[in-house]
Image 1 (cartoon, rainbow, N blue to C red):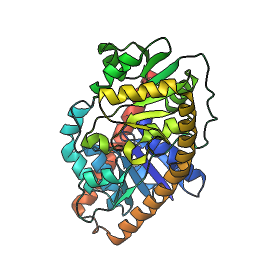
Image 2: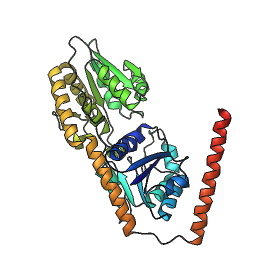
Image 3: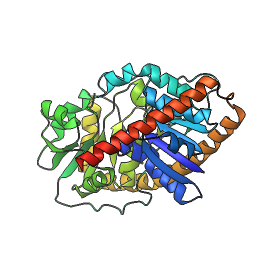
Length: 370
């Protein structure tokens, strides 16, 4: 099976999580091959050479056109979506662009044989048309092999770690963080949340965003780390996966997280993490408990690591992708499109010419820069 995966940015973290890591593992353990292309660079030749096209978060006419071309060739198309992009809140950084792209998002969702999502809740919230095939491909802990346990560093501060690629809409935690800080506690923030915490008067150590492996290595290097995951109770947030818990648990780091989905769906209260109600009082109590109880930190970290390997490993994600690919091919066989009209054949030819010209233009520009 020749797989072609297309994303807006092939180096983006979400592309690594959802496509590159699991699909490369799938290809390595089977006779399948994988090609990964950006939306801009994917060509008619790439489509012709593939059996299945996987489009991640297609939001443009270009994405829809690639899907349409592939289906006119009689081949299977999977549309991959891992967030509720049909209802994006205003605090998300690319909110305006996604809102503007809604018509193309809907057309891309319709122009496929199968939609893959990260959770059942997301599948329901997308409100796909009746009869639309959908399959859950869960996120997983990473890397595939668990990290060795972290030793308690006696005499060292406890590090409360907050990390996100977006600003947090979680003011309820600010007072708790300010109250718990002292000589034995420090707060480290990775990415955009640092600015909001500092503005709220939290004494925070700032760390910029890091690649996935570097981030987990950094998190494990902190003295006595405790991951803190506050999350607002919203429809958009509830449709996310518990990826942060998966990765912290796999890295042997105990977690405090908001008592809302998706974390309430997977964390076993008091055993594999602490589910905290979204009030300043509840968060202060939970933070103090985590900071003062080294035994709790060790027990929760060990139990969470074992649980995530049992239920949310890379093998689970790879198996789900394998099922998704077979389902998409079955759907294509059962719902075969009518033969392209002469207009569509002209469109295919025209799109191929446009792709070839654009590719040559980009090559020429690169050669001139070189």
